[in-house]
Amino acid sequence: MTRTTDSDLAPQELRVLVAVADAGSFSAAARALGLTQSAVSHSVRGSERKIGAVLLDRGRVGARPTPAGDKAVAHARRVLRLLDVLTAEARGAARCDVAEGPLRIVAFRSAALHLLPPVLQQLRARHPGIEPRVRIVRDMGRGTVGEVADGKADLAIATLGGSMPLPPGLVAHGLLEEPYALVHPIGHTAPRTLPLIDWAENCGSHTRGWWAAQDWIPKATVEAEDDGAVLSLVSGGHGMAIMPALSLAGTAHPVAITDLGNQRPIRQVGYVTTSELAGTAVVRALVRELRATAPPVMPSTSVNGSRATSR
Image 1 (cartoon, rainbow, N blue to C red):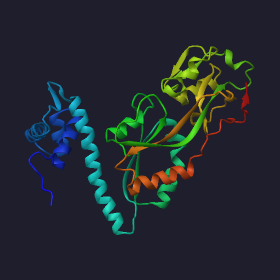
Image 2 (image 1 turned 180 degrees about the horizontal axis):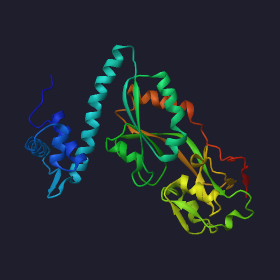
Image 3 (image 1 turned 120 degrees about the vertical axis):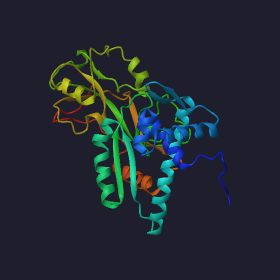
């Protein structure tokens, strides 16, 4: 039998470390955990001694993880989640592989609006014991993938194929492809001459090359907060936009869509999880519903009766 040693971190030490990182101070972490501040400080010092690195920068205004601490906190979150999963998986197996327990999902805005609702509906119908918890994360920088890497989510709906490599320990699989299209006010005869309306999350690394090669696309004169605001501005006649299909799905804004032709950019949408969680009952159940619901290719079709055309 394997025995713990003085160098092993206990689950409570991991919880304390995560709590300080999340709360930003020893005192706030102590309140959240129902401990004294001295107990929290003692626990962190013990973790640092066992790991052999300073994990938290202590300052007058609080505490924040060092680079070593960032790594330790991310792994601590994932280890603690696996301990939770261990219990749920064992209970489910004792009841003929029933999938149950919390399932933490992160998605970018358009995926959360148009892809997840029917998936979650089917998931709840087939697996009432699963408790989905969804957060929306902006599709920028490390985006939704970073939430999984940091142990803050079990599965991410993410755009794949960009320039950033997948962090170690994560697995990714594609679900669908969504083409970009030119979106413009209904009835405008020369939409490519309009000012460009854009938002920060648009034009990721996977479309940047195509974007740079289009000499007809001006620099954005208006930058909106999100794709919903872009559609509102376009429908109001303030300009045109280049948008992916998920952003156009089910919109209530009256806009026209023009196909960008055979060379149009296409981005891949998929899911990312950890190698440890990929085989768990809750993640496998969600993946089955995602694959059953998501179309392989999102159509770039008409919106509010305005038919898509090619230019």
